[in-house]
Each structure stands twice: as C-alpha cells, then as structure tokens.
Image (cartoon, rainbow, N blue to C red; front, side, top):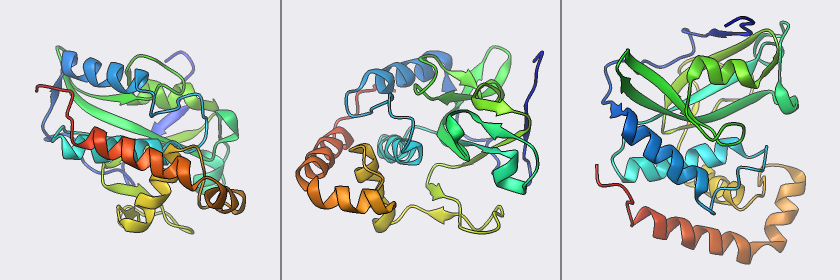
Length: 209
C-alpha cells in the first residue's frame, strides 16, 4: 500500500492456513449471494457482528469453510493512536479462505463498503481512518470479544443468548443497548419474521459445491 494504516495482530489471531479452501469462483458466488440478499441490510453501518454471525451460522449449516475478519482501532485496542471510519471501535465481517492462482488468500465479504471481495489487509486498510489499526482472524463460531482486556482465548463463543442478539441485529435492532432493549419490546413481530426468514434460509443451501 502507498499509505498502509493497518497491521496484522498475530497474537490475537487464530490460524487459518491449513483449512479447507474455496475456489475464486466459489468465493465470488458467496459474496454475490449475500450482497444481494434482502435479509441483510448492508446500508446499516451498525450491527456488523450480527450480520457476520448470521452468515457464519448459515455457512456452517451449509458446510462452507469460513472465518471472521476483525479490525480494531489502535485507540480502542491498546489506547494508542488510530481510528476507524464511521467512528467504529471495531468492525467484523466474514472471511472466506480462498485459493487463488497466487496461493491461499483471506478474502473478506463486506458489502457495507465494497460489493466485491477484498484481501483482509486491503479491507482493514480501507476501513481505517487514521493509522494505526489492528486486524486479525477468528474462528467463525466466535461471536464477540470480552469486556476488558482482549486476549486470544477469552472471546465469547456462539450460544443461545447471542443467537437472540444476532436475530435482533439482523432485524436492525441492537438488543444489547438501552435503546435497543426498548425497540425489541415494540418490534417483536419484525424480529419473529426475521427469525422465520433466516431459518428458511438455513434449510435451503443455494450453492451446489
């Protein structure tokens, strides 16, 4: 990069090299599918962890290899210099391990800012406003980092409670926030409709690979 604003955080990252790989065509098909699917509101700059988690649940159900790509502002992660766009402290999206002609590549699916796949480094650099940010890879079933010090092994895994938050986030409601808790009460039908649409999607794998 001419102006590289991000660094790879190996200490916090999980290993992804050695996993199963997708072909470039397969990765593009997955990206195009989710970019256009009406259940995912990519115009919403919030609730990224819930969209990523929802896609991860689907890809797990469909037995498609994937991880999650995370990027943190330097200030949020370690109180050093560095900020992300949209005043984010962090951002997360699905990472597809892809075998390109040049070799294995971590390709990120994130239509909030790009309709095409990007390498994880390019993606992290793009969402970084001011240097320096930190990007890393985590297993798909890891939902969110803990409050307090973030270490490699202390993240929260997928469970019944954060599944509820995921469905609420998919419906455009941040159920963890004070405002979101109130919105959940008044949007039960919308959330129920979202859950039904999601469960239908789970049962119908659109890919033949």
